[in-house]
Length: 185
Image (cartoon, rainbow, N blue to C red; front, top):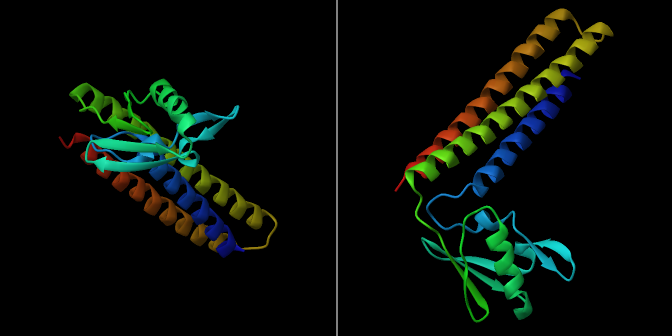
């Protein structure tokens, strides 16, 4: 029973770490990366559709993304969606290909992105701690129902705390890497 609780808690902590990774991918660095456009929705036959489902996004060079829609009539829709997004990107169209140059990051922009990254990391830490709290509550319920001893409870609590510390350290490592990435010129 305790092993099941630990495995479930670890699975949820892993998911929090994966969510942090995908949130970090949406924070723009100075380099071009297709995941920057992941959150963009395009109006496709009356419904909002993720950009990746209506076009091919590739990296042309270190500072330029290239978007090739699968249908030519989507070019203006995609352009409009990119401009409406809060990414601060200005696409330029050449026939059926949309090129998106990545503007240089100013010191102020970098600091704002770092603030955003720290906020995402804090959300991940809170999520991990909430998972710890839930797991400990499940262990306490087992003690209350007299299914495990108090010694087992203490051992389980220690193991759950070690898991929590491990995943919080992973979050810190990811945040440090993202900060380093953002501060590179």
